[in-house]
Image (cartoon, rainbow, N blue to C red; front, side, top):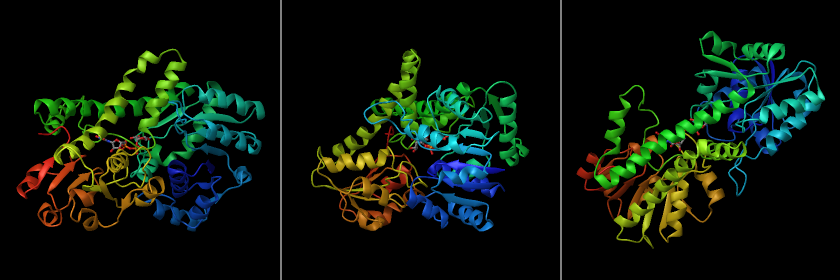
Length: 437
Ligand code: UDX
């Protein structure tokens, strides 16, 4: 297939490279010249395991090119729209500026029979509006909505071998043709029996936000249990193990800690609330406000634990922050609980020294007031407290005996419940986890 991908961020760059890896001819389009220059040279503009490798092999095969010029989409039949839908400043709703601009820029280049495929996460109703816009310009071109469920850190694997495919298509022949084109795009995954749900626009749009709302709710549920554990002496990690053995519940996404962040879950639940209110059904997802509130309280809880253990105040205390990315194997700091906690501690007068295997550069751009080091030893040197906020392997494998020699005060706050309390306590540390005695 000849494919174009509009928007080369976390989603689009991975999609473009993965589609070329699967044998399609792909052109990636973005308005950001620096990003296109990097991608054209085989450099990923962000950290994503496996992306540089497939980027380079696809470029070398000649099947993948990048451009800032929309005219380059002219050779393609299927056009994926993979631009961002961030939260509007000061509001809960999603900002559709980039999606609308991408479709407007694409429309003049559409040939008869072309298919536009929305991948961005959008409020329900967006696809119908975009479809009308495309139809007004070209009555033979059509639209499908094909939400993306990739996880950062596993983005390449999730794109090449997705756990399901969802096609939102119009009724009738147009929809059948759109499905057939998407089947060609995803032939490799379909050969491996990947489940495929063909549905209407509204359902496809809702599938994505419903999935993310469910995941966010699951995390906030266990964090709410952590809050109860904290006042009752229970251990939320054992609780999660025990309820997780029930196959109806499942253990995944039941890790209590400093909560969820990233470019999807927080803004998607907020945009869902805003859209539900517009549709007159705000009460149906009112619980998502509570999900958000529980999540944000966990950040405060970590700050309070540090304060409590340091005798009530952190002023002039050296706090080593281990982790800045919103999750391991990512350099993404969008709505990162880790970075948020680091900034709060700094704001309270602590001497924060933060480290992260991949997210320092992004963090420094956003918060130049913080001190950063790429060396764990430098970060923890003479620290009054260590706070683990992203469960990178490097941090999970730290040796409590060796580390005790380096700090002024052997206090560790495990914001991700990723360390073994017994091991740390035996080595002389005061260990505090989230929802654990
Ligand atoms: C998410 C969805 O999982 C994915 O399907 C969708 O396409 C995009 O949004 P992602 O943002 O990459 O993916 O991260 P995810 O792995 O879902 O983690 C989100 C956040 O939840 C992270 O901050 C993570 O640390 C946190 N989390 C996850 C927990 O706090 N506890 C858990 O048990 C699991």
